[in-house]
Length: 312
Ligand SMILES: NC(=O)C1=CN([C@@H]2O[C@H](COP(=O)(O)OP(=O)(O)OC[C@H]3O[C@@H](n4cnc5c(N)ncnc54)[C@H](OP(=O)(O)O)[C@@H]3O)[C@@H](O)[C@H]2O)C=CC1
Ligand SMILES: CC(C)(CO)C(=O)C(=O)O
Image (cartoon, rainbow, N blue to C red; front, side, top):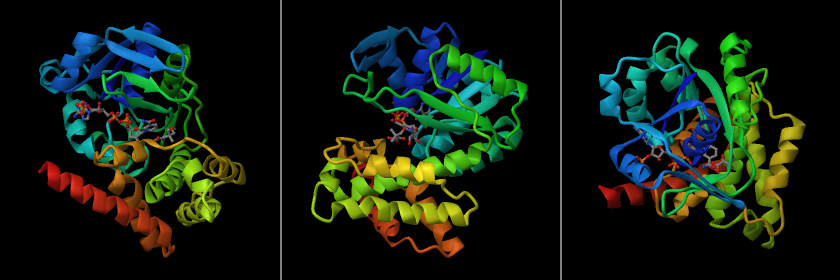
């Protein structure tokens, strides 16, 4: 299976490195600066008592435009802020039989991918990994997860789904195929907006918030809002998933933060519109009040405006 990973960042770099290490035919679509760094240093995975390197096969958008052979599987692993550009860059690699699996949090990218490549090409995907790019550009693992749930948008367990699952599992990736992948994406979205709002609004780890007087009430209140939007949209969050989210956001002393928080505190742009703007706008359309999520959205928009104006 010819696999193209778009972006060799925290998620794509990690899943792609696992696939390459397992001997799969993997190429990374990267931009010139990342290509130069990877050529010099290799794609290194560090943290959690492990350190290993793969020599990645790389292609740039210009090179991809010159080759005409489509890939079997595209893993789309850019941030939402880079999605439009990445969709155009990867287009030459998407043929009539290519399966595109996005790893992004949120949901709106499914519409963008459907619009560009046609819905039959696009599968749903839910990535659960805790990885970040460190100062050297290495992939740093912060927790043991390597989970990529995926599936056809209509729930069919197609032959290509079975083939992809085998490849992912062969690389050590936990790759379940949920009955309804779009619902699974909604549920991850509820989780990430709850976790993201809690830590970003309070500018602290889960433990910093939980251990402060009054702190324990915030996680459940955020979850209630986000879950109410999902329920109104036809994707109620089952009790088991609510409990799992509550366990993450209600842990005394927990150092956990999401990638959104790492971006915020590092002064980088965040995925505010994709994760929060979209959810709160759907809440408005569905008549669901989300005052806390609205506040988180505004908070992140102020940051976004500051960092993008500074960079302009
Ligand atoms: N980090 C995590 O633990 C998790 C993240 N997610 C989600 O996964 C998505 C990706 O996040 P993450 O991997 O952390 O992000 P990163 O910023 O670490 O990686 C994204 C990579 O995409 C590259 N990129 C952007 N545009 C292009 C392009 N046109 N062509 C080639 N490469 C491009 C960037 O490269 P360049 O160096 O050129 O800018 C960057 O290396 C997000 O939606 C996030 O919410 C989901 C689960 C866990
Ligand atoms: C919380 C986590 C690590 C789960 O995969 C995530 O999606 C993120 O940090 O963006």
